[in-house]
Image 1: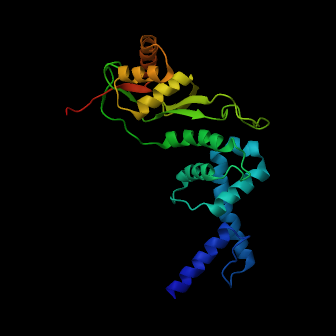
Image 2: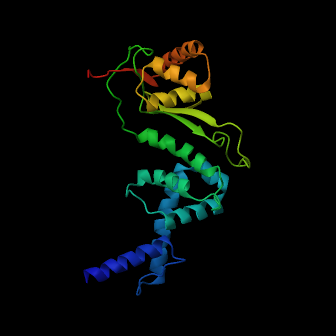
Image 3: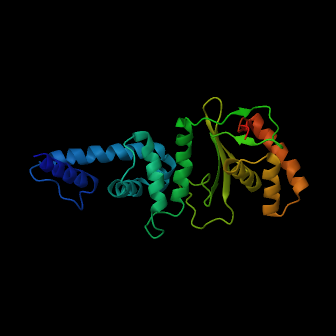
Length: 251
């Protein structure tokens, strides 16, 4: 009996996800099946429409719903939590083949729209730090609520009536962070600032070491870059994007 019920539940779930391919379990009235099909799909479509309004409007209603239906049918979610479904959608878009009929700019745009929600609900806490610490000879600590982002496509410009057909020559580099008022803010940043922020996020180095390595990577004068870099770090500290110098425990 239990195994029969289990098989019926799986058959119903497969049908609800993709009724064009999977037949329902026998004995269920079509009218009732239609109610469930619409209820489940509309819940996911409404959730994603709220999280990705620019993508939805740029694609248009028919293409957007076809995309969501494809996601709904194909993707096996790793979470039952509705607030995390948007992240599942972004991850799924990244796995789609280039010839899968999805606009090439859509994964970048979806990530750009999703990151605001992700930071808004994030509960990440920083390591211990000294807010007045030395940012040159100490280890600058980037807020866990700040992320440098680089997109191949101009995500800040995409919208209804403007969907790029060709890849720009240069990336769009951004900084997104959640401020003390719990507001998520975006700012365009120079590629050099982006590289420094990525280094801060990736490596536990002194500010001097970050800047020396960056100068070597780009072939810049180390002294000039250090002057630029320390000024930038102090500006970021004033905005609480760089929190201060990490307190490194004794060895």
